[in-house]
Every structure is written in C-alpha cells, then in structure tokens.
Image (cartoon, rainbow, N blue to C red; front, side, top):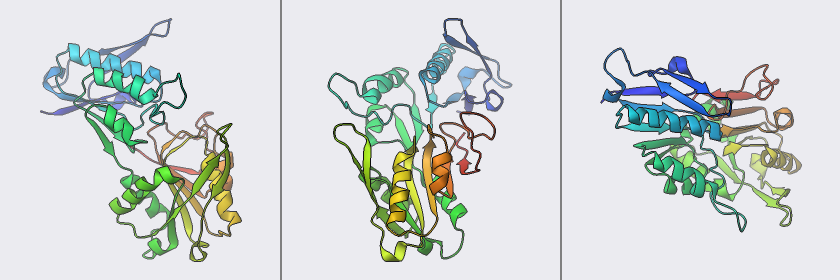
Length: 296
C-alpha cells in the first residue's frame, strides 16, 4: 500500500490537500480533498505530520484523523516529533494529574493509529501508555551536531559529552553507543530547594585532562535553559577553559537566547517544536546561535 502524507505543518508539502477553517468561538475544522491524481484517499496508507505543542494542534490532529476515517482510510500513522506534556509523566502533587497518562494518551489511543512516531521522548512512561508508539532516538542529531562542532580525525579526543542530570544519563550512554562515540562522559547534577522547587546548585565534576576539551551538553528538551546555564557557569568555576555547546532535540527556548549566548558557542536542535527564525519576535535569534536539523 502506497503512503501519502497529510502534512499539517505545511500545506504545500502535503500529498493530500485540505482546508482548515476556524469559527468565531475558536473551533477548528478540516476538510480533506478526496481527489488525488491517482485513486482516492481511501486507497492509501496515510501519515499525518504535525507539531504537537498545544491543544489547538491536538484538535487539528483529531479533526484530520476523523475526516480520514470517514473517507474509509484504514491505515493512519501519526508523526509528532515533539510530544506535548511528556515531562508530566507522573502525578507530582496530591489532587493533580499525570498529564501524559491521564489526558494525552487516552485521547491519542482513542484515535486508533497504526503507529505514533515521536523523536527522543522524554521518558519511557509515554512509550508505555501510548499505543503503537515508536521512539526515534537522537543519534542522527548528535552525529550531525558533533560533525559541525569538530570534524577532525581527533575529534573524539577533544570533546566530552555532559549529562545534565541523572535522568539524562541512560539516554546519553545509549546515544554514545548508537553514534559509536568513545569520548569522555561527564555526569553533572542539579539541586533544588525542597520548599520552592527552584534550582539552587550544580555539580559538574571536571577532571584535569578535560579542562580544555569542548564540553557538549546533550538532553531532550531546553525550555528556559536554567539548568544548562547554571552548569556552564559551574564548569567555568571548576576551571574549564574550552568551548561549550548544547545539543537538545526539542528547542522551546521560552526565555530566549540572550543568556544562553553568554555561555554557549553554538546550540543544535531539531525544528520539532518550532522553526527558529531571524527577525520574528517569539523565535528571534539575533546571535546566529542556533543550528537546526529539519525533522519535517
């Protein structure tokens, strides 16, 4: 069965054409063009591509899926590189929810996708509760970024990967194995105030032979960037003299780039969450700090 793409991020790239409408009360709807150059939509396996940053995105995913099912499409795959809510994978406070378990997973499961394809999912919990889920690891991104950082024959002797906390350690070892890396790995840690939950300290245990190496932090998400900035400062306090880089699969960058640019020479990410543009307000990067790998 041939695959046809329904791309909710870019109508021009979509094999299956559609029209989105929005009503005054905020409701969205989608109408699928059922006439392809050869055959009907129902003749194909359809892959829906979408960003998944908000409930507005989820609403369009639901509308597109239901419209395809009404057209008798039997095989539908969902491609969402970024999974909204993946960090809320447990109940953090009494009376609250586990957002991914209680909200997102039940909705996605109700749509009966043949597969749900994601990039570098935050934790194994999402994979366990979302039916037919497939996780694409960050190996391609890391290999591409490291080639940009140092493409010399001795690169692995000049680079050290940094795990920002214990939670990222398993992933960073899997990434190193998948990318055939033999470079040093530094295991950092962050500390929080028990009462407020705010970060109040960092440990970056750098050895003498690593002081001039290029330090490369690797993680799945950069939101405000406070952890990475705090650890970069701590590394300098511990005597690090080399360049610093950040590789994150999903770049939210909710605090912008001004502070990050003070401590990192380059940042590498995918465009799973958003495209980093020159000259726009929310996505503005005036320093050319960010290099993006296209996953759409």
